[in-house]
Length: 285
Length: 285
Image (cartoon, rainbow over all chains, first blue to last red; front, side, top):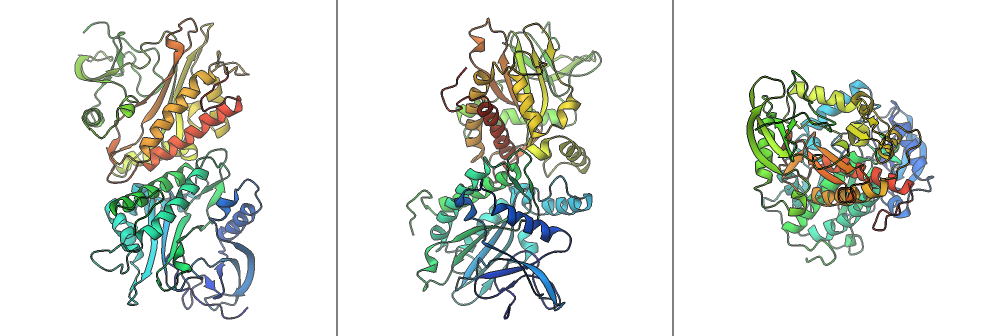
């Protein structure tokens, strides 16, 4: 196992740095996430295992999860030596110039069985961020303009956005230059019409599934900004990520995730409607 | 203003007793709810006023709210003399033998602008009850059997029900005798097929409306248990009630209410499916 490196395009979660444990990529489509010691790693591993062995999950839903390749012991990013990692699909890996946004879904990121300490910590963040207000928050966002300007707002800035701010961020995300005062939204219909389709597929499943409750899980959206790459620019990719806090549904739907998902769907529709894009089938450029 | 009396069929909220301030009915279709001093009363009044003057609310949605008749100063139930009351439709008033259930919708009953004390109090209740787990809780339930046996479980008992318990309560609610070990569910299709239709109308609105967020609001379902009354037994009535904690939506849908509503919808569908009732259009007896 050689040539693992720190990913360029990660926008949320623990990030690897010298001396800091974080995810790695192998440059040929795989993403290595260190197994966290506190049970979260083994929890995420257990989730992937049950997800891919549960016959109740329809294949169109499985497509919205990253491919999973088990665990592997590799050299950790912090130089501490060998460490077990979850090995999964590197979602941004196949793109030339990927733009990435991470929506952490749900107004509540903790579940009832969490420790009191963990609940207090999460509740504080949910209240300080837009999670309680909007049902989701933007955890990270990254985009590089054609002139090679990287636009990656600080996490702190992204935390507490109003509904209006979120719509603006979502317009900037699909613009050639996210830093521009007037977002041109040139990628809006290409990205959001497809994202909306995928979100509606997810919604339909979340209205009935009583298998899992997903806390602190994100919808990741990646699209190709390199206009010369005809094949890759065809479609945005949408995947669910981060399953360290998935719990058994105990007979009820995941109303917390579904509520946040429906809120995000409304934002996507608002952005499309604001641009005069017919969201159903016939996107105008 | 004469002959105001304490309602028999109230299942949740502050209840009037000798010396206790609570709602009254006039026996001819009106329900008098004392204006609470702490701002909740004026808040609910403001909500009704804006609801019935807002041209954005479709008429099929307005039908799901109680009719409102302004305020009136009447003798309070606690013998303290004259007190201002909100005057609204007495939803159970036109029934001979009403069965009533109150579903408090949303996994969170507090909004971000609430005081810290109020948030702590609500959060504790939301965690102790089924609200966090299921996205709603049964706040009250009342039904009288043909042999005049009243079934009204204690509030404390109703607070923390599992998903399985809630399905059982919902089956008992549509049975001739709620206390029976084996609920006969004779009223199930008559009640829940219509309830489901109304909930789906609500859901459609909540997926798009960015006018109000409804915290601590309930869906009240009432149906006629007196089988001799052909006219009244025709349809269950579903109304939203309790608007002391409705706030401005600030540009996002009410993901908290919508999530809980979708959860309740799934429970209604489960109960119907368990009885082999085709939920769509052709209910079997």
